[in-house]
Amino acid sequence: LLIPRIDHEINVGLFDYIVKQRLFNFFLLKGCVPPSKEHELTNRIAKSNPWQKPVVVYGYDDTVTWQGDIFEAETKCTVTHNWGQVATTGAGNMAFFSRLPPIRSTPPHNPEPTREYNASKTYISFIVGDGDNIAMVQDERRHWMQQRVSMCNSGKGCWPLLWSMSPHLSYMAPEIMEWFYKQARNTGNDYFVLPPSGHTYSYPSEQSEPDLSNFVRLTEEDAKLMGTSSTVAWEWFDSWHSALEKYFPKYAEKNILRSAYAVNVPYLFDTLVTWKYNFFNVFGSFVLFRPNEWRGTSGSIIPGAHDTMLSAAEKASQINNYARGTVTGIYLTSDGGINLLDLYDMVPALDSHVEIVSHNVLADMALARAAIEEETAIVV
Image (tube, rainbow, N blue to C red; front, side):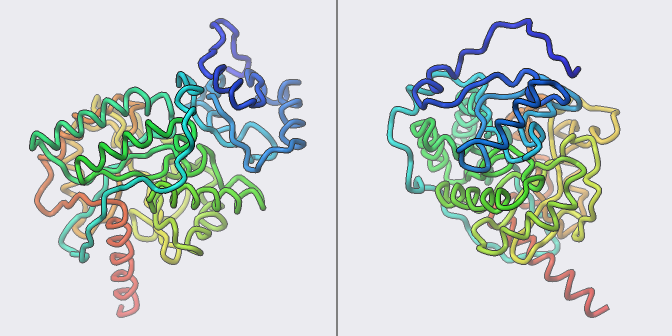
């Protein structure tokens, strides 16, 4: 488990980009695993280097696995806890895709409607996950977007849909990012949010200052560039309490990001915190939605996994039976085999009181719901 075997060929997919950008390159085979000598060296590098903090790490560390890849986000790799992942294993031709100038202004994107909160309705957003993974964006998510455009154009359903998308595409593959935005404009109902956990795939609350504030600033800059106000937010299961205290309230200060969709790591565990409004918490004008995932349709009897592996009919029934007035987002990740057609099988089975909305509308509805609950509490 902690001593990975060297039994595969070296992954050379990023060599062209590493050389082009003159990136510092070394192998993390055991570099994150204490108490190895490799880990001692990694900590020395982490403590003494000239790089911008938090540090951006390219590639993907899947060498140690337990309920997922422990060091894939890199945050737990070093004692500094200020490394974050740009998942690029499997991505190809990045020297070519990065040949053009980076995107420096927000690509044209779809406007969002406004809604008045109706307590007899259920409001929900669906978030397509894994957009932090550049290889998946190049391949599987591109196919999903093509399917989506086809479905919308053929009249098979074109409700609002949110796509997580790496902000690092703006300089690593600007043409790819622009292609996705163009397809979204074709449907008129597709929007983009930041992927886990904003600027990089990491567990941000484990960072110390000033790294944590720098991470918030970089995430807000990414959000402005992408024309979004939402992000996916991953945290290790035992760090949510700290995140709720010192991390998420920072986003309420400037109101650039208005909401985040929490994902727990490992996902089978509990977050060990209270969700005041059941499906979300509020920090000033910022909404953090409780973990709510749909990973596949094959079913599971494992505690904690059952609700994430429901069939399309079962998922629709679960949503239909949410208490009226519920506001939530559901994160779709391919880890369990979910695909876009599963979503298209499920949505027609939703009752008429369930309204699918975009990210800003979902945040508005959550704030309105919270305000009603606070008023009711005062009256009582």
